[in-house]
Length: 273
Length: 184
Image (cartoon, rainbow over all chains, first blue to last red; front, side, top):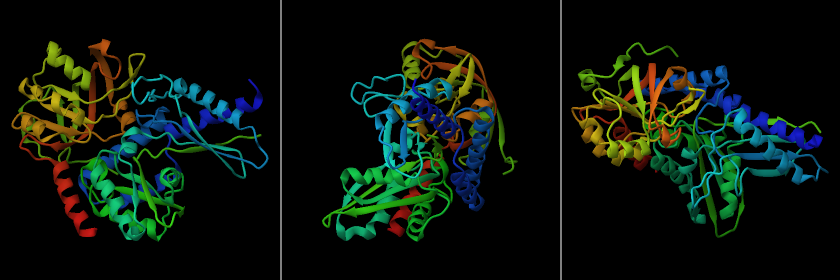
């Protein structure tokens, strides 16, 4: 195998492994800060399990959750690097190795026949998003099915900017314990019908241990609901809300909420060219 | 965080002590339990229950098993079994373990017979660390859908639906709906 493809494959395998076994530091900081504030005894018992589980996964070097997710990669490449096809080939090779190495559960099925491909690949997967950046990096973001199912998209009216908060809170009200809260919510606002869902997912790539005023306002509204971990009640339903915006048509206000369970997985590995 | 001193210790197979539990109680469960998902329930309805159902605990879980060891065993969504599990309390099953809760119909089937115990979603590694594989029924259904016989030690659970129609999920949902009307 050529040297560059091998480097990409091994960086991909490492990124998947790290993401599956260990949660990102910014998420752990944000979650620990949230747990400190929890007053509900049932929720405290849930948090004991979550912390114990995180420790066991790392100690035993096994996935945090048995739903090891669908496989999405965000790649940054430096100016002048044009070999995009080799990136896709290298990532596919890295994912195939991770299937047995991590190990991963085969989750990719045909949407109509429901036939499982057996190796987490298929039409559209692994999903690879490439952007220009300073360094060559590969970020793995394996996404679980339960939380993805609670995600929502709305084409709101331009006069409804104030109703975004209601839409976000309503998304969690409808979801209840199903997406395994405490969640992180990635919110996309603006762009187009197709673009806003991408924005919402990209918002989940941002560090979650600081929120701006608007993100905090949305997070507080969700936490007011008292849904708590696993829908059993508690002060914290959302660890963080992250918002990403882009300009949109003057007639439109696209809004998307991508729900992420407490297994908030992402890991970045640099590829040395 | 320190271990919950208030936890009730239970040993499966269970007896009438489960009827005293209240929604919100914390439980440490030890003893023998059986996994079962959709396919296993359909098989049991057709061919009967392969284990002694008296006092039995059924765990809604499709574990990852490798070399006869449990690698990961988090709970699956119990609501999928809402329409295919009500015969089990009749046969003596005393508890379901899962995540997300079950329907009003199941709550009624558990009245004066058994409880629903919530295990934290995603906690596959924690579960595996407290489990030992003992055997299997219906192995032909595949790894996720087979009935695995498992010995557990101190599995930390919350009583989410008790034997007297107490239900944490519906309490929390009701309060959340009220709050939603207030803030929006």
